[in-house]
Amino acid sequence: MMIRQAAKKALGLTSRQSTPFSVGIFRSYHENVIDHYDNPRNVGSFDKNDPTVGTGLVGAPACGDVMKLQIKVDEKTGQIVDARFKTFGCGSAIASSSVATEWVKGKAMEEVLTIKNTEIAKHLSLPPVKLHCSMLAEDAIKAAVKDYKEKRVKTNGA
Amino acid sequence: MNRAKKVVASVSTLLTRRTFYPSPTFRCDPLPTVSANSESHWSHESLQPSPSAQELRFSRRRFCSGSSDKRITVCWNCGFSSEKAAFLFCDSCRSIQPIDDSIDYFQIFGLERKYELDGGSLEGKYKDWQKKLHPDLVHNKSQKERDYAADQSAKVTEAYRTLTKRLSRAMYIMKLNGKHVNEEETITDPTLLMEIMELRESIAEANDSKELDQIRSQVQEKLKQWSDSFVEAFESHRFDEAVKCIQRMTYYERACEEIVKKL
Image (cartoon, rainbow over all chains, first blue to last red; front, side, top):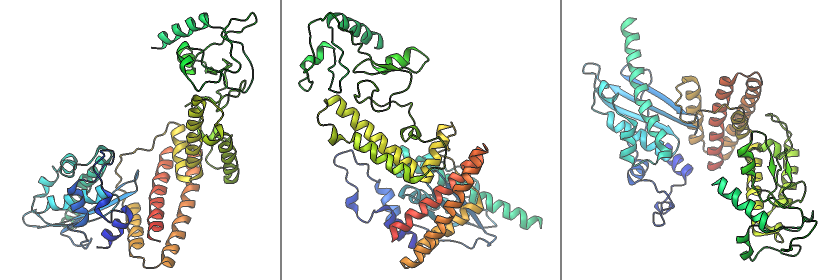
């Protein structure tokens, strides 16, 4: 909630009239991006120390973005049952991570590793300059899965 | 394309002869097509060949620099050629020159190419340049010179902006040394990212300006600290470390921007 408010202020996207499309010179955010921005799904956190949780924390230093994506995995089936994200960055980064959390839910871990940034970018119609935001989301998914697996190895090995 | 222009240039010098006056008034373009240009001042021009005429060579800098390895710049106006890149004004006829990309921002302000600089001198020099170059101040010059003045003015402003802020200065100086800070890289350093995450969260959760100011001063301190680390790393040629310093500084700058927006 607070991220949305903070982000809203940050982006100045407090109203739709900041996205004109008539002249063609202005680039407006795609409606999917605005949708994820206004109604972000899965914002929040899981307990990092929960053994069923994998946390992916990634950053894009060029634009100062930081993205945290967490997955909750069913230990028996290896399926991701829930996901949360927290992203500080531009609207495209927020939307990309929101989409990522939606797409990983209900999938097996191996399957989500095949989610490509280009798919996220296409879904959000991201312009070329924002492609790295979707890349960040893809990296966040991979980091979360990796973290979960590493935790399991630790607990199993211990 | 260059060759064609050269041919035209040599033909034009055959056709017309100009008297060379080392005066500050505007010199017209000798190409025949420009005679239709109503903005040119013909006050000192003469189309008739004169016995003591010196041929004006109309050549743009890019011809010369393209054809030789030596950096030679030629004034478009008086033909004065110099190995020193003329910034802004031709040393000879004082006409405004087009942008020369080889001149870096430090040179514009007469500074050494190093990271630390005295902020006061920068501002003074900037204001001096703008006094000379401001588009409003070149009314009496031709359209071409006014356009050059506008370009140069923009470049000076860009240079000033880049050099005043620590972060952009750091990135620029890295770029000048051929070290590009990777634009699209994703980082996964957990300590740094956790710190930034917590910082941004605290900014988002801060309720009053006092809290925000407090956070801001902490961040400014961090910026100073990492700026110093950058200098050290850069001067010791530890460029990877320097890049990391820049990355941190970017994150702190972004956080500062958030604070300012919230305030």
